[in-house]
Length: 333
Image (cartoon, rainbow, N blue to C red; front, top):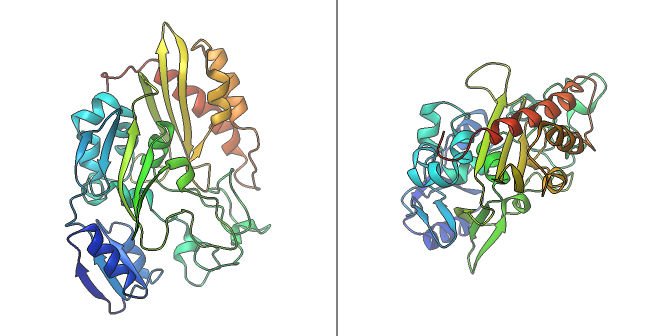
């Protein structure tokens, strides 16, 4: 690791000021992803601004939403009574990710900002569009190993799935991200916070220079009553998803008034299936309708030589997760 300077910020204003006043400066919270990247030389900051002393650790109901401070640990968010009672899909998705030790350190904001867990990204001798602008991902070549690749939002820049489990659950719940910049605060839907990788940028978020994630807001107005998160992976623990499914329903007398459907392991960013949600609105929660919705969701998937299985697997996981959600009302997790 290279030499770097370090300072502790005690307020949002101080944090943004410190980052703005220094070139090649990074915010650090739990550090469960950034420190790993620093160790292997992917990130080489000259200056670290520690934001863990800023009071972004509240979990509270605010209006018709639940507000999770950006520095709330994954463990605290998953175990909070307010979350378990009103947004159990967040708990379901968090507890399927990483290990208990990592969840104790990792923060809500940091979880959303994770970088890809791709061998080419971590191999500095390999080309990678997420490290270097205009670089071509080796998995796009005929001999490239694309088994783990995404099937939505892909291009020759990057094809690796976004690694966050929590983001998938929060996306299905139509969560918002609260951001604080040097001059103003803004709120944006989580689904609009990410953008598909491109040759023009190594970033996949619309976070502006110096901005901080201060909180995540989970709206309660969809009135979701049932939810489930299903994660399929190569080994049972400490593994990223081959594919995961997140489903939330507003059910009354088995009628689907609203739904949230998202998946991990399939998109270069957390992927929501609005077309499938629209199909299910006003329909009965039956296996037949779940199968039709899943068939709609997989439309537009693009595969390589080794990951064709993901399309059929995604379809089946979505159906199974919808069945699980129907059978899992809030308060039974």
